Image (tube, rainbow, N blue to C red; front, top):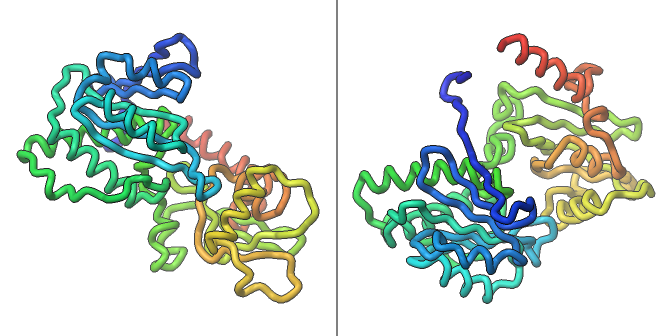
Amino acid sequence: MTTGDTFGRTIQLFLVDGKPTGLRKATIHGWTGVVFVSSQSTFAKLTERDEVDRTGIYILTGPDPEKEGMTRVYIGSANSVRERIKQSAEKREFWETAIAVTTSDDDLSKGHAEYLEARLIQITAQAGRVTLDNGTQPDTSRRRLPEADVANMEQFLANLRIILPVVGLDMLKPQPRAVTQTAKPVDERTTGEVQFEIRHKSGVQATAVEEDGEFIVLEGSEALIDTGYVQHHTAKSTKERLLTEGVLTKEGVGDGENKLRFAKPWTFSSPSAAAAVILDRHSNGRIEWKVKGSKQSYHDWQQVQAAKQEAAE
C-alpha cells in the first residue's frame, strides 16, 4: 500500500559468513549499488571481495575518541576501494566498522566516485550527527559531471540515504526541525507535532516532541542533578556530555536548586533515555512522559495512534 509519495523498498541483507556478526552485503532491488559492511575482525574478508577491487566510495566509522557518545566518520573514494580503504584504515585507530560501496556492473567512473565522496561529506557535515575525520570538505561544484550523470549520482545518494541507516549508520539524516529552526518560536517549529511533558514532584518540568521517530527535549526544560540515585552509565555519560557542550546549564536556575536547564533542544534515542537524564535516575519514559495538558502517558498515546492507523488501513 502507498500513501502520497511513500512507497515500499526491498532491501536484501546477505550474511556472507552466515553469521549476524560477520561480513554483510546489502543491496536494494533494482539498484546496481552494492554495500559491504565489516568489523575489524572481518576486514580481511571484505578486502578479498572482487567487488571491492572496483571504483567506489568507503566509510570508516567508530566511537569518537575526543567526544564521548559521538561517532567519528571518515569518507573516501578510490579507483580501487580495496587498496585505499586498507591505507585509510591503517592511519586511523578510531574505526570499528568499515563500509565499502561499489556497483555490481562496475559502472562508476573516477568522476562519479569523487562526486559521491564530496556530496557525502557535504551532507554529513550539514546533518551534524557525527564528527567528520576528513580534514577538508571537497567542493562539489568542481566535480564537473554531465547533467545526466549528476542526476544518476543523486539517485545513488538517495539509495544510500535508505540503506546506510539499515546497516547502522545514520549520518545523512537531517536534524529535526525542532533542533535546527531555533530562530522560530517553539510552537511554530513544532507545528503538527504532539508535545509531551514531565511535571515531577521535585518541581522539575520538561517538554518534548517526537519528530520522524526521534525524541527531542526542548529548550527551557529542566533536569535534576545530585539526587543520589544509581544511574545507568549511558545516562550519566550523556548528562556529562550535555554539560560539556553547554546544552545543560545552571543559567536561569536559582542558587541552591539541584537542577539544570536545557539551553537548547537535544535529540535523545528514546523517551526513556530523555527521562533518565531529566529525572537523574533509571526511568521508563513511556510512563513518565505525558501528553501535554493531560494524564495520557506516552505509551497510551502510542496505543491510540496504532489503533487509528490500523483502522485507516
